Amino acid sequence: MLGSGGSRVAFAALPAAVRRGVEDVLGSPVVRAVSQPGGFSPGSADRVRTADARRAFVKAVGLPLNPDSPGIHRDEARIAGWLPSDLPVPALLGAVDVDGWVALVLEDVDGAVPALPWTRTDLDAVLRALADLAQRATPCPVPDLPDARTAMAAQLAGLDRLAERPGPPEPALPDLEPLRRLAVRGLAALDGDTLVHGDLRADNVLVTGAGAVLVDWPWACRGPAWLDTLLLLVEVERFGGHDVDGLLATLPLTRDVDPDDLTGVLAGLVGYFLDAARQPPPPGLPTVREFQRVQGVALLDWVRARVSAGFRTGRVEPPARA
Ligand SMILES: Nc1ncnc2c1ncn2[C@@H]1O[C@H](COP(=O)(O)OP(=O)(O)OP(=O)(O)O)[C@@H](O)[C@H]1O
Ligand SMILES: [Mg+2]
Image 1: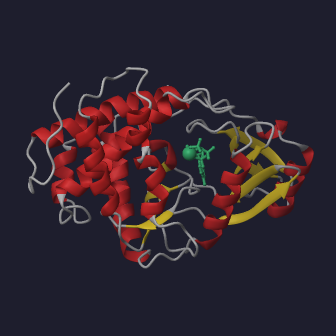
Image 2: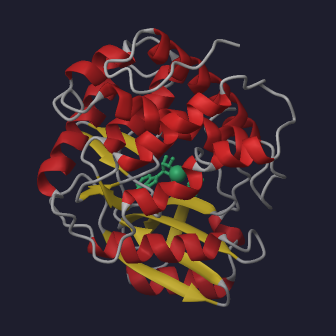
Image 3: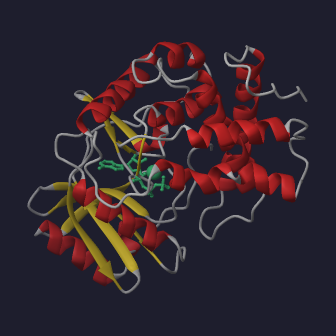
């Protein structure tokens, strides 16, 4: 269930104007649509084939499904339109914006979502894609993206919100103050001018014979080249089987980053997940809160373990164990 579970609308159930718009982009009627699992969104997500045998991927969402989702798809359409063709991403073929619905028509990627727990092969493929991104997408090629510090400030303030309004008490956070100090440090480290995906999990990756392709770009920002690797490892660590601290200490993109800065960003994310998890579920996204709770609890354990393993600078007090 984790990492998926939205209730996707079928392509055939989209409003006629949306389907017509998609077919105009493709230049031929859609004759087959196979809905894709993965993700949390209530929108459609289909690999489609047209009467003239073209293939594409189509995702669409409308105001009746969730009032915020069309704006998120609109952001993704703008960003996808700017992504250079030499990046490991699908090309945007076109977008449709009609009657409160937004659809993206993207190049179809014939790949598989990585299985969980992550295999070393899939993980290596994504790490290679991120190394590629760091090289080809610095400076950031997409204009007008928020910088990572601004983009993550609200997330990393989750610990402040937990402090202001504690509870429900799952899990108890006796080390909230040290976690908050760490998060401030993490936020301060978010300099950089690399294109950052910002939402890397298995369900936003497809692994093909030629390597990993990164999909679902609405949360992209401009920031440090190491950030996506760190964010990816949050999920990798939760499902186990890999020495994530060893990876952070040795991977070319992360090995020169102060480990305390990495721990700081992770500490801030603990706050984000645990604060978000106690909010009511957004319309059409019934599983996202449970995902956030489980991810937040797992990440808290990881942060505590990193802190216990020893701070290099000693500038921050280690959080007490619960
Ligand atoms: N270009 C593509 N080609 C083939 N399949 C794709 C493509 N893009 C995405 N997919 C598949 O569709 C699923 C959903 O796509 P995506 O993550 O873009 O949609 P979403 O509804 O925005 O998801 P989320 O709920 O994560 O926001 C992915 O997990 C992947 O399996
Ligand atoms: Mg997704």
